[in-house]
Amino acid sequence: MMSDKPLPTDLELTALDPIFREHPHDRLDRLRTEDPVYLDAALGRLFLTRFEDIRAVLADRSLSRDPRKAPDTPRRRALMGDMPPEAFQPSMLSLDDPDHKRLRGLVSQAFNQRWSDAWAQIFNPVRSPEQTVELRAAGQGLNDYFARAIDTRRGRCGDDLISMLVAAEEAGDHLSVREIVVTCNLLLVAGNLTTTDLIGNGVLALLRHPDQLAKLCAHPELMPNAVEEMLRYDPPVVQTGRFPLEPREIGGRKVHAGQAMICSLLAAGHDPAQHSNPHGFDVERVDTTHLAFGGGAHYCLGAPLARAEAQIAIAALFERFPGLRLDPQHAVKHKRAPAFNGLEALWVHAA
Image (tube, rainbow, N blue to C red; front, side, top):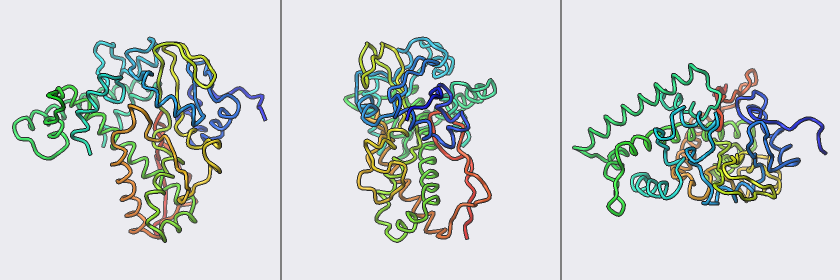
């Protein structure tokens, strides 16, 4: 049944909105039903909520992620840290081929806190002046730290990640110092924030579904499948974006060159056309297909490591605290972080 209320728009579809932050599916389900390729007129962007549309967009290598190629808007400038395009050095996350392919190939040779939390503010389009100051300070602090670490390892490489990035070579090509610094920034933020949030979201899902927790504890061999279900049910990254370099069509709607397409990874995992009982949490779900790690050329390089960390950490937590349960006197609070999805506060009893 169609509602007479206006469809949600702009910040109402991010964790900056207190209702969406704690109850996102009320709005995402409505968009998927009423307008799955929704033109968010406030921002001139398309917001996608169907699994198949999102999978197609993520797999399409002709679409761009590089903000330097996007139309000049306040949001584009915010994503570049308010730097001019010629001074902005994208990480591997925001590069297109052939630059993305080159950098990913080199980094893959080496890859099998306070700074990172502040640096995540680059994804916040409405950050305050104070948060912008923190962002710049964190960025400078990280850059200086990694530059010193790279210089140290030039003379005596060890077996750590930075040493392997310094030594990484593919077809005679090497990473520059600037590329190593940017890559280390990306890996620190991605490895810290997203893996921490995956583990936290997974623990919360189990505590909210004690029958599933009991089943998992009784059958620990279910842990790999349980982590996939956690990624589908409550992913640590809720959305990602692409834009076409020339006009095209997505899900029956025309898209003009440069128009942003926001893919809701959270909505994709709860699409009833893909999953039966999509809002249910089932550690034995047969089809746990999800898009939590993205897709196409930008499929998460650290996905195997993230899966392993979650499987080990969650198993160890409930082995150490088998009586862990939620404190009913306190509400769960999620972080106010656009694009990311994690816990700010979770109160538990460890009886």
